[in-house]
Image (tube, rainbow, N blue to C red):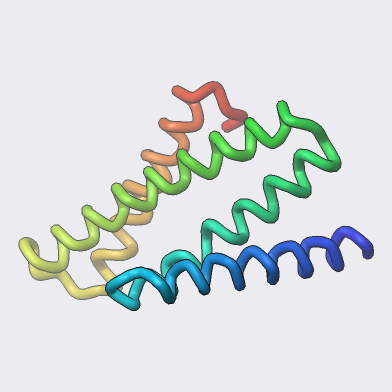
Length: 115
């Protein structure tokens, strides 16, 4: 139970810090970008280091980076299917999920992660 309280408090503090940073930058759309994933990732890694050590946190950070790269590949494929192939949004996203899974597991395997 205390892990959830710590995660809530640390995550909230980091989200607030990133939201303030995003508020200072231009364009204002950076505020949403900085308020979500980086703050949650940092809070999760901090707790992982505290509970399991640096090696475990390093494995988690590699997995997070692989997921971010796979999400970028997914996003590019969705955009191309929507704009160039003129597919419907549901069709493009469902087809791109296969690309995302392949990219994510390939990156994890190449990076020495546990896939």
